[in-house]
Structure formats: structure tokens, C-alpha cells
Amino acid sequence: MKNITVIGGGTMGNGIAHVFAQNGFTVTLVDVVSAALDKALATISKNLDRQIAKGALTEADKAATLNRIHPMTDLKEGVANAELVVEAATENVELKLRIFTDMDQYAPASAILATNTSSISITKIAAITKRPAQVIGMHFMNPVPVMKLVEVIRGYATTDVVTQTIMDLSRQLGKVPVEVNDYPGFVANRILMPMINEAIYTLYDTVMKLGMAHPMGPLQLADFIGLDVCLAILRVLHDGFGNPKYAPCPLLVNMVTAGKLGAKSGEGFYVYTPGSKDLVVAERFK
Image: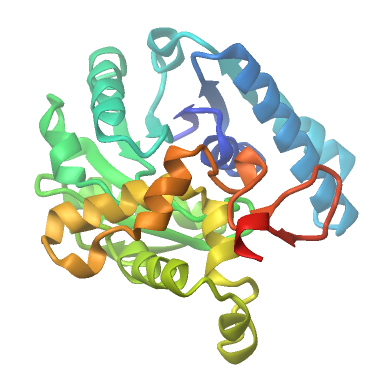
């Protein structure tokens, strides 16, 4: 397997494209917005520079990695030669189902279709394709070039061969794959999101940082993930399990409604100033 297509040029998509390209794969990065592709390539270049500064890469490695990434705005053309397509669009069920319908129609019949979803049923996504046996979850962690874990989620029809292929492929990327069950939130977010939700009720990060040795508190982590993404995952958990413990905190709902999405919007529980490494608690939480 050499030809990989990544759908979505956002935070997760550009990170996934980065690690595949750095490990010798030819990557087609697809996004309908050309400006998003420009931003993605700039981000990848900046992240490669960080690796060079740490002595992990050379300038020649960076150039080779960037040369393996081919941006494209047309999905049909972008998946035409793919052996694996990894969808990394926004955590929205309807959007993912539309994308998978197109991926299924235009990708070669032999191609594996993977999704980077952090909570949505793989079985549900696979069911709208003509190749459910070749649909699988490949949930990378953010930031993708740094984090080692990949949750590998097989749907009801996913074959052993496809699952093993993705497990082996993850190892080729220097990741540690863990096969998990296809239940809402899988494992990582079934544990993480209730903690974040409870932290929103308490509005306190220091206890988790100093008492539990978390590098960042759950509120800062929520800002980093994106409050809209956290809300979407909690809704999947709440709908899937029907347990009130997964009901999103009303404050989270209101913040997303107000457009306070965390680091990507410039404000969430903290204020993010371009070029500054200092975090300031958002005014309403002081």
C-alpha cells in the first residue's frame, strides 16, 4: 500500500497527511476549500520545522515529505487511485455519511475506507456503502505527529484482513494501534468526555494539573480539542447510551452556540492570543 487519500485539511486531516507522507506514502490531501489546503500545507511545514529543530528530521526529509503531499479540491479525482482513504472531516454524522457515499462511489473497489471519527458508529457509516467489509475506524489522537495511539475500530462487517491491514499500517507510521469495540465514544472519548463535562460544571483545572499530574487541565484540553467537537461527542454518547450522565453541560452548549469554540476561535475557557504562549482565563470565568 502506497497511495493514501486524506479527506479534510483541518487539524486532524493535515496531521494524518503529515505522518503518512513522512513515512514514505504518497498522499492526496482533499478539501473543497483551497484556502484550507494552503493552511494545511503551511501547518505541516511548520510542524516539520519543529521536528528539525529537535534533531528528529533533516531539511532533506522535510522537502521529501512535502513533495509526497498533493493537494486537491475534487474528491472524485482525489480518491481515483487510492488504496486507503482516510476521512477526517468535522465530527458530524450527516456530513460523514455524505462523504462516505462519494468515497464509496469513486474510490477503487479494492480500496479500504477509514474514518477518523472520534465517536460515531463505524457500523452505521459502513452500512451506507457497498463495501461494509472494507470500512473501518482509524482514530488518531491530536496532535497526530506527536501522539502514539491509534484506536482501530472494526464495524459489524469489517473483515479480519482489513483490521489486520490497518493495525500493521498504524505500526508502519510509528503508532501503537489498539483495537476497540464499536460502541459510542469507543474507549478514549467514553472515558475522556465525561471528565471534561464534569470539569465544565466545576470550572477548575488546577486540581487535575497538580493533583493528577495532567499536563493540561480538562478545560484547556477541551479548548484544544474544540468545544464544538466535545459537544458533538457528548451528544453521540448521550444518544447512544441514553444515560443522563453523558448529557452535555448547559454551559458547554451555550458556549458553542455563542461561537466560543476554544483555541481555534481564539476563546473558550481561555483566551488564545496569536504569538503568545501565555494562557489567560476568559473574562467571564475570572
